[in-house]
Length: 361
Ligand code: UD1
Image (cartoon, rainbow, N blue to C red; front, side, top):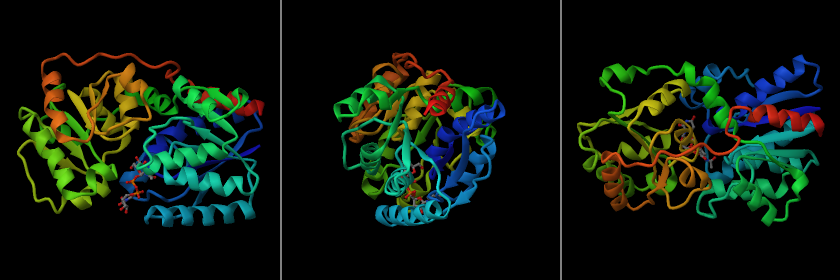
């Protein structure tokens, strides 16, 4: 069986790495599974893509669709047209997509319309907030998925409520955590550690890239000002996403303890996170990593598709109103942030379980 593994944007790369490694291992022991790695080219910078391939030992893609940037519809259309052309020329037996980015949805649609089965890893999670492009990507993808690989019981319930039969839902855990646990001993000290003379538990890592937080100058400025005002002078290390950088340039703000740096490669980024006093973010994936590493996490969003990171883990939803930042920072500095526990099956063996299921299909 030939499986197309689709990867398009930064958060996909840590999710596909363990799946590829598990297929390679299975091939060595006689499994008939073969894969073709398709990079859609949604993210194309070395810092957003290439570094992750190198550090996570992901093989060079067999195909790069070079779709590049654009509006949501432009990106979706380019990826669909190019992936369809590939499938018409060289079909596969199953298209495996991960996560919720535009590439995930676009490739699922192209495959399904050619009657190719679709498997979705990280299926079933929902924020119920249709103003996020990712929520639409999740809903559309899951509406045409054949095999659902899930990270949580909540995701299973969401799918069942939508009418998906039990036989098509496989609760396997979290491949992003496979990558985290496998690489934890390889985390690498980034240059910024010495440059800023950072000390363990004495700095905060920030990441912001959601359109709702960063696309409007006054919104971004308000959030950053509030974080700085309540940071007690602690270094704020801010690896800045290209989308955010474009807006930030126009804000003209500087603060002594706010340190903007380029996006970091995986091993360096997680070195910083593991040792941070806290993380302030609007990412979804980072809330899972901080939960597993036991690092306090403040999420600047009104909702989350990963409720287990709040109910079990170290994450707290602050919303997008800057005024919620002060009380949360006070709680952090008083030392009373919750400790949290690790969700079921986030144990580093998820990719193996996925391959076991695929072998049986
Ligand atoms: C995408 C995903 C989001 C994910 C995020 C992680 C969707 C809908 N969103 O958002 O779920 O959390 O990636 O990074 O798929 N750009 C570069 N270099 C690159 C890639 C992008 O400069 O390598 C620029 C683009 O030109 C664009 C901006 O960054 O202006 C946004 O990129 P885009 O892929 O549209 O969405 P993200 O905001 O990165």
